[in-house]
Length: 243
Image (tube, rainbow, N blue to C red; front, side, top):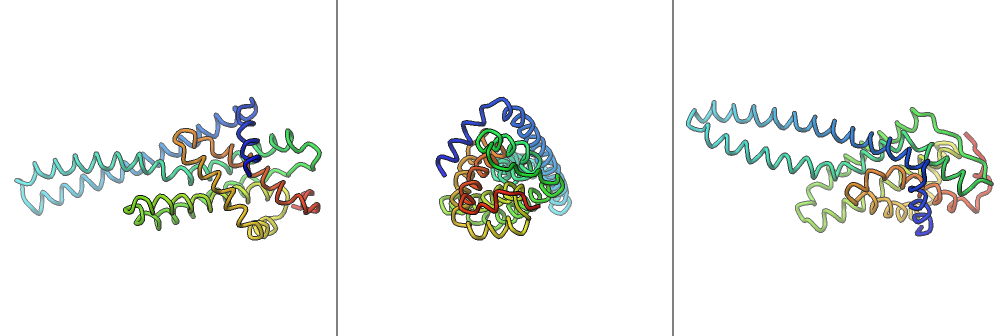
C-alpha cells in the first residue's frame, strides 16, 4: 500500500497529471461554491423569516435583540459553511473523480503497466452515476455521524473511518470497472474489502489535508490503479477487459 501511495504521489507532479489537476480542482471549487451559495441563501431566508416572525409575535421592542441574534447566527452560519466545506470535500471529490477517472488511469497504466492490456474507458454516464451515488451515500453517512461530533474525538474518528470506507469503495469501483464487468467489480470489492478499507485510509488521510484535498481525484485514482493491479496479480484472467 505504501509503495502504491508513493508511486501515485510521484506521478502527480508530471505534466499530463498537472493538466488534469487544473480541471479537477476547478470543477471541485465550482461545486463547493455552488453548494455554498445555495446553503447561504437558505440560511439568509431562514434568518429573515425567523426574525420577522419573532418581531410579529413578540412586538416592535424586540427589534434590537432580534438584530443582535441575527448577527450572531449569521457569523455562526458563516463559520458553519467553512466547516461544512471541509466535511463535504470527500463527497465532492468522489463526484469529480467520475469525470476524470479514465484520463488519470490511462496515464498510470501507460507509465507503470505498459505490458498489460489497457483498461477500457467507462461510459461517462456510468462514471458520473457512480460518483453521484457515492456522494449521496457519503452525505447520508456524514449526517448520521454529525451527532457524534459533539464528542469531538469520537466524532472525528467516526468521520475518518466512514470516509476511508466510502473512498476505498468508490475509487476501487471506478478503476475495476475499466477491466471487468460492474458485477465482477463489486464482487472483487467484497472479496478484498479489508485491503480496500486500508487503501481507503490512505485516501482519507489525503482528503483530510486542506487545499491539498482538491487533488484527491488524481491521487485516489492513481493509487487505486496500483492497488487493483496488486490485488488481481494472482488472477491472470482479470488482465483482460471483459466489458
